[in-house]
Image (cartoon, rainbow, N blue to C red; front, side, top):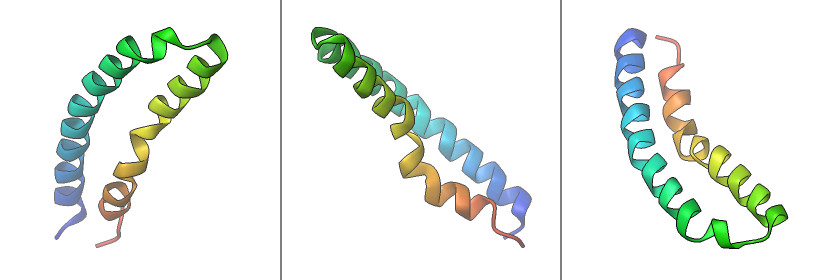
Length: 67
């Protein structure tokens, strides 16, 4: 499969994942994290902010493979 097609498919996949992940993360942050101390909030927000990239790493590697 040509790299351009992989990048297109991967981009659509990333956008779909983020469109699902963002509302879940916001709901979690609004309901649970807001009640914790500030130091714990900072750690949890950091995890939520970085956490979306870990499941997408295989997709990104696949997208960037040479032809």
